[in-house]
Length: 543
Ligand code: C2E
Ligand code: MG
Ligand code: MG
Image 1 (spheres, rainbow, N blue to C red):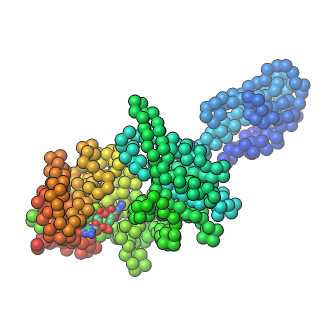
Image 2 (cartoon, protein in one colour; image 1 turned 90 degrees about the horizontal axis):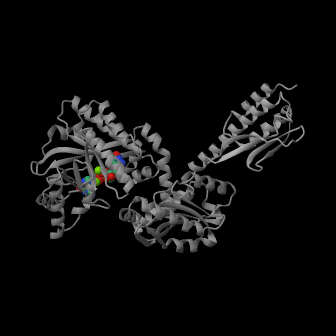
Image 3 (cartoon, rainbow, N blue to C red; image 1 turned 90 degrees about the vertical axis):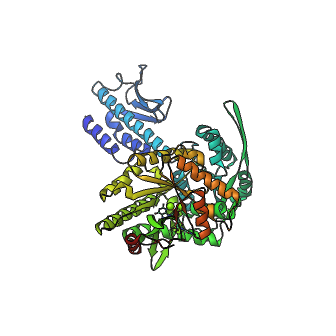
């Protein structure tokens, strides 16, 4: 007589390890079947996922059902045929327990599959997300199939504006329609990934690639949005890498190469399509090196803070500074423009931003110990950092760690059109406001900033972008716009600073418009902490 309890324990132990898998389950049940008087196991038959038959006679009695929840909450059954009559009286309760264990394990398998699937798909469009896409890329890479494809990265033109016009929820519906139009175009062995927002990647067979580009140049989308009909042609800006076997060494290139081409199309050439060329290949390698060295560079403290003074243009007194990061690597100094965008894209920028904040706080506390009269120093925070829900708490904690007066640190961040991001930004600024930490909207007037959104943000300062004053001579229009902005900000209790002031005429222009705080080469360039220490001791500029 087999020891059912022992067998059942063995069965449960075999299944308690690692990730639940159907194959492991089937092997385990087959192993113990005979000792439980089970003659036949049918898997995935009828309404159940598993049917166990006893070695005795099949009778007409109803099967014992063990109902368990399938992946999406659907009910599934395990049928044990027939229980009381053909399993012996002694066997029957053990069979029940076995069926119960099976039900639990099968439920576990289903849940796990669901979790794996949702971790690999974009929740809005159901397309593979970055991680799901990369899994397929790796599979195709290992199978040597990638040279048959062209690799795409694309971004929808003006989707931020569509979203602003019709609202986030409607924009989501439009995105779902767009994604399904593109998916309908794909052949069997082609794939598309939705990385989030309006960013996509795709692997398209070479012979199909031209037609795909044509499709991306404009997809007509129509949708009923309540009372209104939405109708637009949505075009994309595209980066393309025509994969060739010779230069394909790293599956990560499948996304990074066309992505760099895409960013060149968007920011430099302003063309709808950019193909990967030698220059882009070199840029991809440079970016790879940045990522490779980043951890080590943080540990070796290769990032240094330069301080650029902010000056009152009436009194020519130093009133504050901005901390700007530089990377000193193997005897060379790199400016943030060369590495910040790469770290932003890879989600690493918040580590650098917190490092910079910490360094600034440490310098501030040293200056205090030296008996210097400190000024407020602003630190840049990337909008990417907003995905950290504890960002404002983290900032406050660093300032507290150095027991600094909260008025000695200011946070600079740029505006956004993305509504979801706007919500995060607004909550972040409010939290800092409530914590007594001053905030500034950086690069105001460039790109996406708009006066109307200022109404909803609790901020202390507007930092007027250099582009506002980057003219040989100033028109009446320039003057009226700037004066109005400054006036409006003042009415709202927001102070104004202008950055990038290099020349006397620019200084006069902004002063006449009502802005008296200046940051720019006219007074000083960003400088190392030691040099800034002497500025702090002196404070007065001779102009
Ligand atoms: P930003 O925050 O708008 O910083 C102002 C930039 O303008 C600085 O460039 C500064 O050196 C430059 N600048 C200041 N005055 C003048 C001027 O009179 N003429 C000209 N032509 N330029 C002037 P920098 O240091 O290269 O920084 C560039 C950008 O990199 C910054 O723009 C900021 O967005 C970003 N950045 C710098 N440090 C950090 C950081 O720690 N974290 C993050 N996330 N971004 C940073
Ligand atoms: Mg700044
Ligand atoms: Mg700026």
